[in-house]
Image (cartoon, rainbow over all chains, first blue to last red; front, side):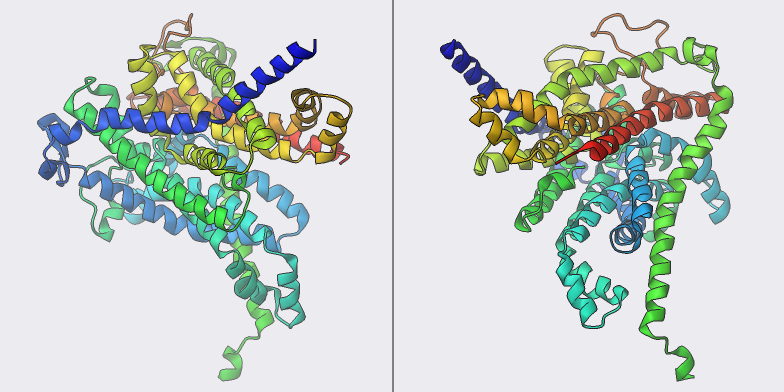
Length: 298
Length: 287
């Protein structure tokens, strides 16, 4: 009896430990499979072509620069919308709003995080892009701008929840000290609370941007998907194509093992490395400030 | 002149608070707007035939049953793989792991899993499950892909609710002669159950609404019958909405809004259940 109990305990403990390590295994597996299919690109496509400005796979042009600039353009636009909205809303929820208001606002922001991205893309096609076309008098409403606006909305919940946690974690004594010295609540927010929470707020912005870079369906549906080199501000008002949208749109039609197939995996590898860089930097900030790592996930 | 322009700091505060209130409204009102708008536009399309029928006329008429069933299958499939694995991983992190370099590596890995773009999960699923393990484009491959994507959400929320159980509960149980595992199973998991459920549902909600990871791992454009085995491909609501709003010409707008509404109801119901469980558990908690 005693022995079988010990044995069971031993097996279960081992099993649980194994599951605990699964996250590392999966990250490694993902990286290995992206490399396995993506690395051959270096042999099959000349660097001069790979880093050129022409993406036209049917005629063997695999220049990924338009896709990279497309991603950057749409993401920067999204940041322009999401950062003020996200941080503003976080400050409002954490510092200003009465308790009952907070109880309404937080679930609603969470709800936005749960809306499927296809639904947003769908509304983007039917409502937002026709509106933009008419309002700005453009030849088409399917532009980087439309993508940026929707992506901004997708990044907002991430920014709000992480930034709000960071603001919440600022000790109350800081605020009380500022009030005691005669500062208004507004001055306290700007000169004490926000600076004290700055590393957390920065993490929030980074994770929000990471979310925007990786978003696929919405972007594919509303940005028009033209692989043009987006270098000037005017490209915001014309169609662009992002890295994620390229993979999603073209992977279904390529032959397994072809150059095109490998190049799409190569793009996936680049995306993976970008998200790795963002998340490792963000988590190192979190660990440094001794914040609970779970906060940035939810 | 100077006197008119000079506003005191209390007026600045009022202006600032007004601005922030406006920003908060600007983020929240569109969310409510989207939900209300889709509900109003989609409601006329909902009928028994729409919910229980098969697509007809190049998906322009008939129902969306295969897509609804497909999404249910995918959600269940995802749960089968991600729930036990995620909860076990969370138990390890909360109850067993000591704070060393390996544990920190696990945490970084989890954060990274959470940040990987969904389409990259799709590529990975294609490479590993569809081609390497030869599952083909199937419910199995898509569920496994979605499960790995959901894992970080389940692990982090479960761990948080396990940690919220007071240490005294464990101490008492062990002092009464229970083993560590008995304590976890009978005491800690019991107490943390509502929090775990919330996390699991929120994770599955995300999986149910995702399109990119299933694009090349299990989604089918159109199927005349329901999938009969985990190795069949399947239609799914999010992918179906994508298809009928971009790939099918002359698609009746009513069907599109109807499909969007069904997807929204599916996802929001899960969200609502999670919110209710959480608030009820909070109200009931005695410690």
